[in-house]
Length: 359
Image 1 (cartoon, rainbow, N blue to C red):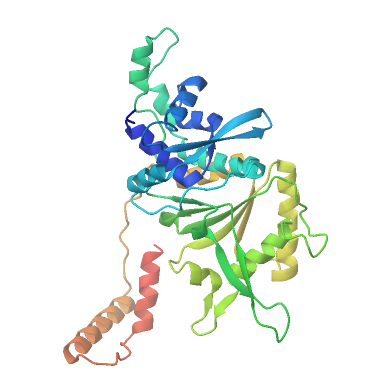
Image 2 (image 1 turned 90 degrees about the vertical axis):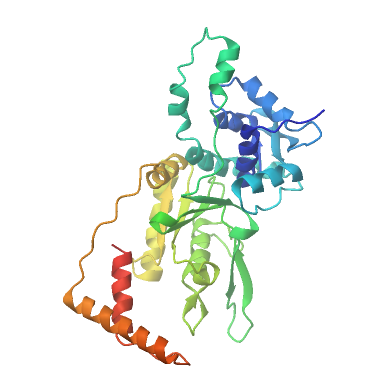
């Protein structure tokens, strides 16, 4: 039996390439307006045929035995072609114990990816007595799109692994360390890179012993070592800049299950910053519930057009520095001076460029 791959199928592959695993209930959010049985049938169709795109497993959730789907190699190929970039290969093993935590993180991604679908569905003006064939036709192009060019989501992948080295004892060699955030959200337009740590509340906030690496404050310390610790002295480079030389500003987002837990964690973050950094956070730490995490990101991912660039006036001093700098560039180009000589007013022009870029 030949498998007909539709545009909807390709986008499901693209979304699953980012999420790794999905269950039926969450797939309904990707395909709104359909009955649950219709969504399950669409997913199961992709697990069959000559070109099988999905692989199906079963796991015991809080609601009972449920299916979970991931990509096959063929589905992974479709996802890479759709998104025009290489994605991490699909999982080879099924870890049922980690599914509840995984789907908690997935819900944040789905909140960003599907926020515009209810309005799209409302425009179809569906009603209970509608002819089924007409209903299917109206819903044909109502589904979540995998491509989101203004932001990027990476979930627990090798690409998002954060390495650094730590001095454990004086005179001993540096020990290899790494962090593995649950997800990384990048919004280049706002120079933002968020490391998301999804906490279910199962671990303590303050470490009660040396073997509590998942305590919230222990995570804070490791992120501080990675984001602010020096990988090289000359030139001065942090482990974060070594991993990400693009200049996006890092932040840590601690996602907590309840407002009560948020309050307790925020108090611990404030105390940590006060004791270690005299009250000033070395990088931005946000403590939010899952719902408020989604709401915050949606303010950055709004589809409203980018503001028009505004004219920026140069002072007489800046204009003179720029002219002198450009004359120096022309002179060096004419002389073909090697090795490169310092340019006149180079620092002044660098400051000017920074001001213009920051608006």
